[in-house]
Length: 507
Image (tube, rainbow, N blue to C red):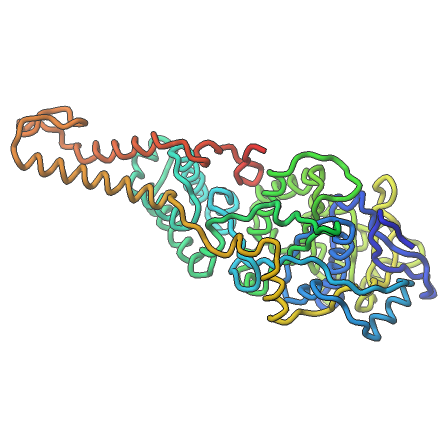
């Protein structure tokens, strides 16, 4: 039926509903990306689950988000329920074997999995501006903030680092405007207020160290299976912009860190982006263009990106054109927009003369889909009406006790649990401010004594009445110069940023 070079998806049906053939995804085209669409309750999660199982058994690590908690069952062995066994017979899955899969649970809030963190510097100004929904002027200030941090050797690790730098920029607004362009206190204040909102929404848990190492989501087990990283996203979905920005950052990190490998026998990693419409909703054109560029180029890094969403219209046309492997579950067509979505979905498939694709999409049963995978030479196969195979792992969520046991036995247990707060921009700017205050206090004390000796940094003798009125600013300038001389940190050296603004570190 299938071999080690493919993943069994299900069985296509003839017009009389009899068995036709096995439908499979060829692993050598697994990095050509994919799309899983369909209305709520039509079986998208099960399709995602069997794809993740297939890639894992083929030795390909998988990263996916668990929006409702149902996907957690992939970590436990399935059970022989009547409807599953019946489906296995219908698609000629023989033998139908049950498995549990190697799963690593992650959670941005550290509650249902290992904490995931990224530093402010790694996120970059573009993605942060998207996360904060900044105006064009505010995004310009954010870019200036990152430029200053890079030039002055200020590590931006967590939210308080960025808040401290912005406060420092407000104090130096006139000086910075002369060099970088307009930096206004109102713009800085607006960004600070948005950061405060992010902090109250829990984003502070995400920014910091230890930052996620890409290698930890690309693990394989001793028996050669790919680890499945499952992100607990039920609470994260309360802040959908943070969810979308995080997954976009992760895709950007993969693009920046992984070397070019061309087309392999199987992908190095498969990345499932559930609720994909959140990535593109209200996104500026520049961001959509860069996402399209990353999707197009990341294929050569051996990474497959699979978008999971309800409606194919959720995906911009340029991105949609990059998605070669497709699973289309049922869509409803009650409103004009839904009818347009059905037509769009039908038009993206290679037609099958045995049925009308647009009509079939509205008549598919739960667990049934229109499937078109890439065949030899990367040509899309003719679309087939397909019964999706049953999963080998458990359908539905696991219990809290089962989750805790898996987390405790995880290969990354203990590596990310405790946050690390090392010296960074917040502490460095506090230190410089204190040094400036101490120097100013000393200058005032010496001035009050009426002595006629000089202090370095002042161009006149104290007590003559001709001392410059700008001595206060001179002390501040000295502190700023001291910060500039401190360049030498890793951020100070790594100022080249990639397509999506994240650090492009040397590999």
